[in-house]
Image 1 (cartoon, rainbow over the protein chains, first blue to last red):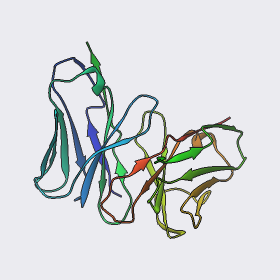
Image 2: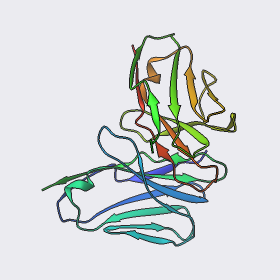
Image 3: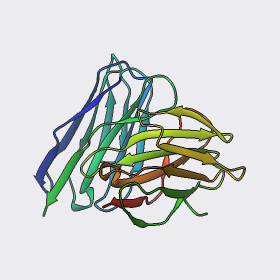
Image 4: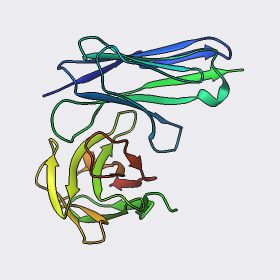
Length: 110
Length: 113
């Protein structure tokens, strides 16, 4: 079955440093979504990427979808303490199921 | 506008028991998906309901079953509970269109002793 791998598992940065998490799928994806989960909270939708090579920005966050639609990345510029949480990618191949990666936990110290 | 609501918040059961978890979707949403999130893991897709039918199922045993009601609310039932069923159970709703974000509820924390 489809597997979605995320690296790194954990990242600890100083406030103001950049952060990147990578997502790789064993199969070609029809689309990929990114979610953020704060400690003790539930996943909250950040963005969806559909097209090959797509790049989307949300303020300090930049999302990319690979040309082969098998990988994706989330880059945060100049992290803030409010960025703390676990970032998940979730991909779809065919059908309705979203397959989540294990997530990257980000810790930001002031 | 209420978001996705789930009940109960926490639940403690013993092995072999049965449990029912409930979910009310966000207003205007007709599709409900259920996920299991073990500690330190990403959510795992259990199944999705649309028009009161199970539309797709993930890799979970038949002990996991569900139902969707005409008002789009949904239930997740788990029979013959195992210790490994201890997890956060998340309900997510979305409009019927395939390419849409999912709105997650706060989850039900199930502990099996």
